[in-house]
Image (tube, helix red, strand yellow):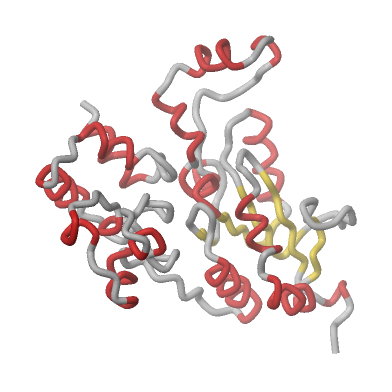
Length: 261
């Protein structure tokens, strides 16, 4: 029997600077979504429903990075009314693609893109949620994995630790029997330093990993650099790869700053 809404943990889903793709992963749960909706009270989720219940909330799921002063103020308000805060996706956990502006002249970009730049108010940087408020759980990916999202929600409901692997994509290649694309045909691949979660999708189609899930646990980026040099890839291309989806993750940022000098 489904419990009344007021008896179920309340969940709110929030969006900051992002493409909405990670929120859509929740709606993409399809077969599992009705079970999730029956276990929690979806109190605020504009992507899915116009109905909204005021906080506080037991769980807030946050997508997107902080790119404006209004964002910085709003995430503090959300943190204050959330018992548990989960950030999802590369934007929320590592600044996202928009963090590329952290190494550029933002005012110059705005003057080129917008007809009336005087109306645009933007911070000079795009930063992860964790740089502004305390975060209880993070789920990486661009977009996140549906399987990992369900695991984290189940962990929240049952009071256990999520079972999110922190090993590299290379392990997933081994598990599915995919030959190493760098060894087999010299294709540059971020897999050795990228956290698993996608099922090694790109190497399965003979393409190198793009690093969508951010740095793995203790990534040896210097070793990856040596291999890339051996197959003819220079630091310019390595820096570009490190600054694609998770540019402001600590490990990728420190390495790209060092190699860009």
